[in-house]
Length: 132
Image (cartoon, rainbow, N blue to C red; front, top):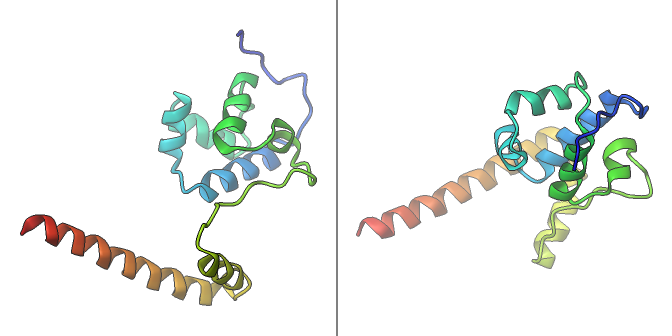
């Protein structure tokens, strides 16, 4: 498939970049990780996210596939095609996440730190088990 530049397509690069960064972060991917999946330099992905450069169309297709959204959503932010959310299987945890999302930012940060500590503690337990 020959790459086609998007010079002919009018869409807001700034909005595209913001959507791209938000989708990447929602999937807990770094710029380096997503760039590696796309086989591009992280600097190029950063330029896309900053709205400085239009990606080639084949990369927009790949982005939509990796990020599990439509091309329309990637380019136009179609309100009828919301970005999928991380699927949480545990019903109680899913409900708690909804409630946390409604809290003030500083309260959310406290909860994130508590979760980080719990996860770190569990990882340390696993490491200690392997050392025995």
